[in-house]
Length: 222
Image (cartoon, rainbow, N blue to C red; front, side):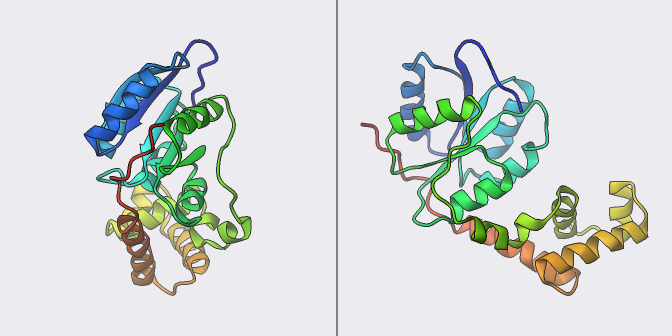
């Protein structure tokens, strides 16, 4: 992922609430450490922006419409030109920061923190540090999704999109037998028995994310 070694930190803000975007934009614009490149209100515009314009840091609301923070991170994490990603959310447990870390985020900031604390966290993440609250790594390792390889994660999504084994083989440019091998490993890691159960697992996780905390809770501006 890109890192700007000189000059202000180039950032993109993503939040579905225009009032939050406006308040956060003012804070970042008044801080000489940062240069605000763009603000967006949904996942599609965020991904499009950071893939077209070189930036150092993307700051995303976990419940960003269309895809959500977790999916955005998974899409961008292997792109060499993608920025580091910092997630913020109203969180009362370890679940959101744990999932953000597992997906590949570089940092997490709770919405109960002040904007000044968010700014400091952004600076740390942009300079190469990972910033998360305390997480029990045993819980993270126990998450089946954490154990999946990049290929298995992509294959799970493709299953959910309705691809057959033949279509998977064509899409990934591998043989049918290799598809079956990957699926067997996938089912074992998810502790499911077949394609239908794997798809059900995938959508249960997406549903969990959709039921997450409201995106409307603001960071305290103090």
